Length: 207
Image (cartoon, rainbow, N blue to C red):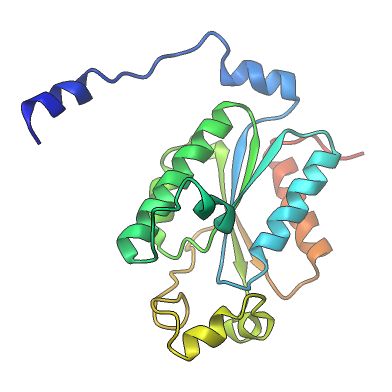
């Protein structure tokens, strides 16, 4: 890297704003946080993340759902599925989620995010009370039975390379804030997530 590039980087500083995260959270009536749903393709994480966002919105919370396919339509459309591209995909999502938490939102994310090191790097962007790793643990046999997009079938046939769970590893979370059984009914899992948010004072107790 040349001296000119180095000088440009050194001139970049974070500018604090008059309207703070704390003020936004006060207006919203709840804390900002990231709900990082991780699990195999077909585990049910996207369905659960959507159910959680819907319920929170019904309760008046300010939310946003970051979904893997939607992100790759725009922000990460230039990325493939190599290990390096997957890492960059998760890095970008983490930075976007950080801005949304600064806006006082409860952000649900639904990404396989197969590598522990990548999830840890995202965690380190946040204060401990802002980041919640939610592991939707579903056996791969069940995920293959569901296979809503036919991806496992294509991977087994060799039409998709580096597919998580087939020819690319998934590193399960070691100490997630919530370990969810992906074979349980969606309503059961939803209540477990809401209970966690209440326990952590992200949202008020439900009446």
